[in-house]
Length: 279
Image (cartoon, rainbow, N blue to C red; front, side, top):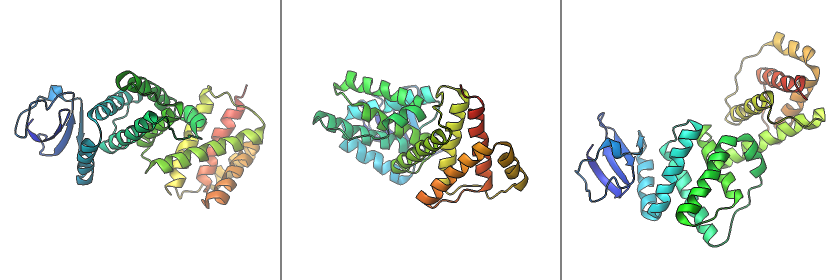
């Protein structure tokens, strides 16, 4: 592949066989090279295709502003996350993580850190992302000699989760995580029961609530109704149904978001499944 522009020794802009502009990353792929030179595909570790003009410009600004070693370690964290989580992260995800790491490392050097009130919930709701983030701060300490706090581990995990679920921004991700936590607390208080958080049914309920919250906050709820099924779960699972209504009332009161029959039905079923298998 032919180099169109060298951003630094590890990042170049090129063109693939379909004449699409691509950003390619790899350790030393552009060392002693210039525009017009060839690079081998085997030397490329990460490639971004179909990026926007704005994202390309952001990448160029990032390369100018941020030290090469931080850009490189961000790429390594992304590659690790892709392997461990099984998700192909976008250029936007990479830019967001790299920018965050730069400022997090700067704060750490000044013995300053940001509080993370959602840390406990991030550990519970995004265990894969949190595990990768723990490895990430080990990499940062090993290669850059900078110690990041556990609060920062949580923020890195949110960056990874934010990309997988296609949330619009970190603020939305944090708000949605807070809502998931509050709905689970409603269920916990209603039944007066501490769940087995390692059980399969509990994990399924959490996953359902996560996507449920994502849908309602993105205004993607289905308009379908099923009066028969709605009445059936109401009579068959009365406690789980009433608990679902409390969650509905919370969302309506706090966020002015109305919840339809279909969502109440599935939320009731998931809550009941957990309560049927408690203990």
